[in-house]
Image (tube, rainbow, N blue to C red; front, side, top):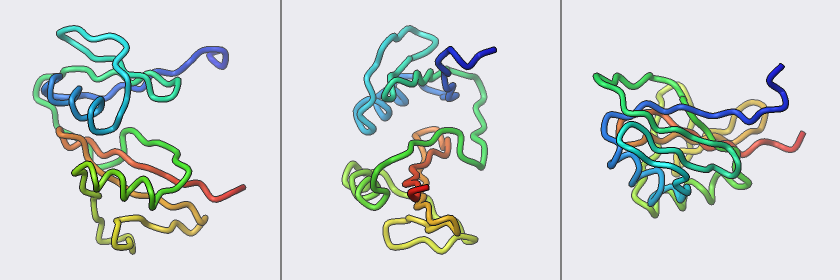
Length: 126
């Protein structure tokens, strides 16, 4: 039914200008449309809509993630932009915060200014 249509990812934020700055300036996404209620960004063909919501309580799990070619290189670039990786007691993460999943995937997590958990994943060749 929906296989012929593009998906849109929604990310709740408390302050649009601060979120826009992070997603545009720090993560490098391009703003497509912006108004007082939302900011739409292009993430390599996928639309991400930052939506202002009252009383935001970020969830303790990943809400948005990217597949990357090299997790270590991307984690290093994020760190260079001032983004800290999140650490979890139940994962054995390396110095950059990258975890090696049993599948061989490499994963790291970080948060946006509202505390939304974001991730990068380098998928093992399948």
